[in-house]
Image 1 (tube, helix red, strand yellow):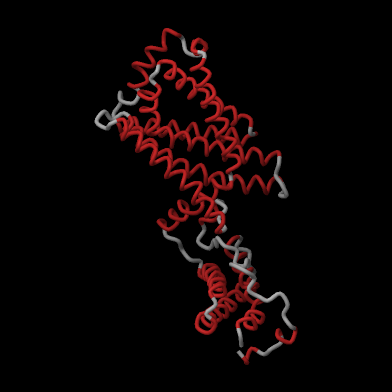
Image 2 (cartoon, helix red, strand yellow):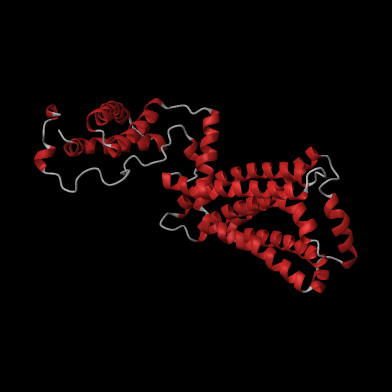
Length: 362
């Protein structure tokens, strides 16, 4: 029997096996007879996989059957995922995929935060008198020459790390929570934080100390820290927008799906804040580290984060990950076993006589 006949004869059985495995893995709603059927079909597809590898040596067919067998194995045996494996799945697949699905909201969040900061910094730089409206003239020099720099070195590194990490997490949760409430409060939080950043940057631009002071003490940790806040805000905006535009889903279903995905994002940003806090506590204010090295560390950490959430995120979504919390379950299968891997494996038209060919002639 050639490979086309083999596929035509067994394709319905593979689809049924994959459907049972998918239901068992994602919703755990199989009835007793269906569980028995899944076990029987799992054994059959395992034999078919062995035959595909040894007799036909078709890469696409082998890959597809391997996916079906893996899904069935996880559903039948209830495979346990070790804690380290679960963490790896979260870091490598779920979190990046969740961020990538929010890329449009991430763009909006970036405009609200970074756009506001850049515009206000340029406004205060071009019109120095306007900064007196937000920072009293009597305090500007004290803040720029004493308070701004001493903030990063007046406390022990470990104490400072704990304080700034906690504060950053609180800000991100606030941006997420208010965004999820109804979009506009979260957008206001992002705007206000961007305005504060732009105000301080404008002050140092006006004084001619933007590169020598502001960037040296903000860039090392700030790129990662502020980007993580932007990501958390984007997760909130996505949930909040679902209230108004749930798409082709019912509003409760859409809110449930987006809410579970947003939890994944918030948990991921917490780890980013820990890394940013370590840099801020032990690198930014360290007098022994040259300014150029501080900035280089911050840029490298930031670029690594972008590659993680955008580069890997796009790839993870293409593999079938969505970022939902249920993906961390042991039986979750990222690729839909029913979907063909490359081109359709079965010919467009299959003669009826072929489908009726006895299996004994295999």
